Length: 319
Image (cartoon, rainbow, N blue to C red; front, side, top):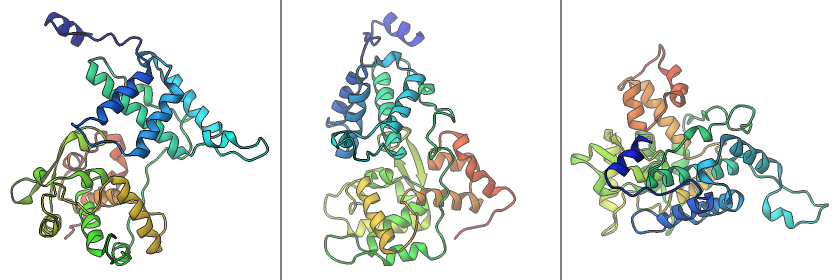
């Protein structure tokens, strides 16, 4: 209210947002993402936004509540997915996986937060907080998969060394960099040469490349700097991105899943490398917890609690 009053006093234009539908919020967000100023959304993510628009488009954005969200989660978890509705009544029908439901909610949250910021009205994050009774059973808690001895080498050795495939050097580069920086896959894929500081000591991650939309600076270790130099020597002419071999974050995750399968490693995702890297940094004792949070981009200390027990009474120095 104070922000709106100030805008009015200064002659600013206040957009009436009371009756804007979620349909309009999502359409405007997708139009923004299709513009020239930001990286376009992958087609599979655009599908998530269209699904939410179809389901919730007639809700008024400013009147959407936590109860509405909880009801949506329950509905998605109990009703058949749309493509199965065409099957005969006697055929078994699948419901949405919890991971899919989470993607839909994340898409809705991103669009509503962006629209509120663009139009200068408050965004209430409490809408998206689910209690234990409303939360799908697979959501609580943090995934704690760590690399076991020899798994990093097995992954790299399982690369396909042939044209038009990610070879061993490509995987050593991106896996090694992930383990040194604790960066998310999209942050690594979108990292540009122009984001590097002098002597490759620091890497700036702009907010448009970060899930939480908060820019940060990542200090680069000796190994990370060596990886960057190898990438620099091998990069194609006029290539703006450091990890040019991987066109999109989804390409990294999908290729990594195939790599894991070839390596005969169980239950490992590319995002687990971020957890492994953060754990190693905690155990090294070189940074305090707040410095680590600033480096890794953890914005909420409660989500960081899983790492704290690792440094209580045990620290070691990593090479």
